[in-house]
Image (tube, rainbow, N blue to C red; front, side):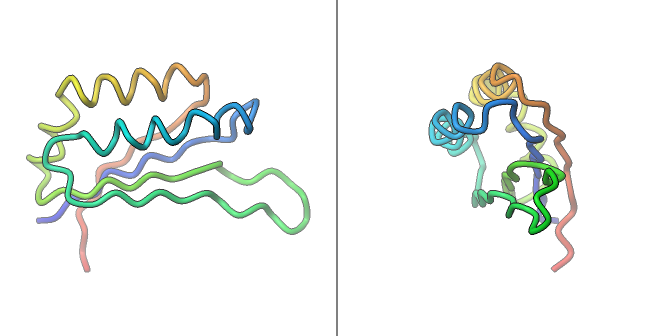
Length: 100
């Protein structure tokens, strides 16, 4: 079954600094073996001015759970997660079974 890894990135302390490094982070994600598709999204600001629940999402698509699991155990994933953690912005990762 197709599998998606969703990275939910919380609101950074310095959004401009985070955004300046984001293209490199996305480029590292594109190097994950077996990656079929990458979808990057920035959360819209709330109309009432309150903080958004998160800043960005990054969806990484694979042919199977096994492919996704293998990808996150590679040096490419290590470089990706090291940079993401190094940004100081908390994040959550979810593995999902894509149900069409």
